[in-house]
Amino acid sequence: QVRLAESGGGLVQPGGSLRLSCTASGTIFSFVAMGWYRQAPGKQREMVAIIANGGATNYEDSVKGRFTISRDNAENTVYLQMNSLEPEDTGVYYCKGFRGLGRTDYWGQGTQVTVSS
Image (cartoon, rainbow, N blue to C red):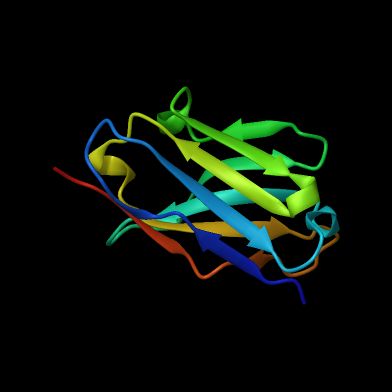
């Protein structure tokens, strides 16, 4: 089983930036896509950004133009660069590996992001 480990969360002021990392214990090519999700207190988990093996990306509307998802295949790592952070971006951010073919996807343990002055 491939494990996903997130890092890079923390406390940042509004307008600030953070870069999250998700490192897989095995090759990320074992996944058809990788994604970042977030869950705010009292809310459901929502998709933030997804990147496919071919490099195609998809973003949740509220983060377009502010967040960028990227991948380093050699390092088996997916990144989420978050700029112009807003208090509404606060939540636990999870990395997800899409396995496809009806197989169970993998999740990381999450990293807390808090945007507050």
